[in-house]
Length: 277
Picture 1 (cartoon, one colour):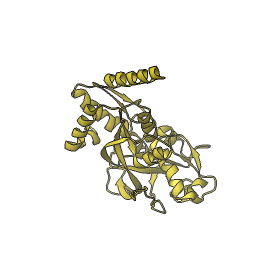
Picture 2: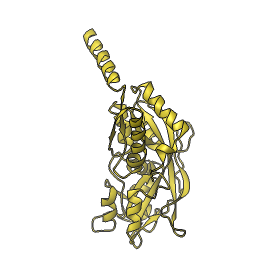
Picture 3: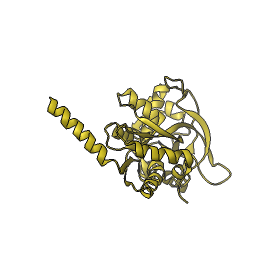
Picture 4: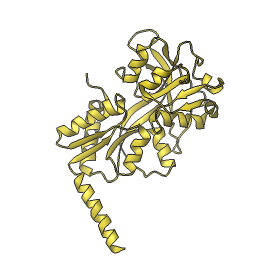
């Protein structure tokens, strides 16, 4: 028994030492904000400071939190509603290194489809919605929405995301709506560009309608905002729900790397949160 304890301590020391000058970041889907903006920017900055960096693709918030909980990465990005669900499911508490700003839900529908608004998903018979891969930020958001407004459960869920979900909207057997999550105002996002390039699709407004839950601390999970989805003047804003996103670190991460990232976020957060021109 004593030998096992000694070996466990040695393994921990070895893994911590191996991480001393390296950083593993768990990001998101290709083309998404977590992977192509936050992750890419953070990786570039850490490389410039001498770290060996690996940026992992992921399904999104919940998978990032799970990887951190298993010490498979040191740094990762996640939404507030995903972290609440992660803790509720018994996940290990993580350190919040810094706030990254808002993450908003974007609902896409056909202009002349069966679903004319977000409210139709509560009532329309046989309605289906694609919510991304299991564990993604959009899947977590939809699942939390159903706890606040049980009528959303009337819609059938399809675990599919990306451009595949967009291209299948309204096709036989395809979804009637698609929900994805990203930071507001990033018009370069691959899915926002894909929707704008398809003249048969549009972004649907999402009303408050009971989506006003709070954490045990009293902090609201969602806020409601009007955000841009294109660069024009007219018909380029949509009402939607937003939550906060954070950069998390695993307890086993070295103080050096956490302090380095914390300094960057404190002094120049836009070097991480804004896309490169």
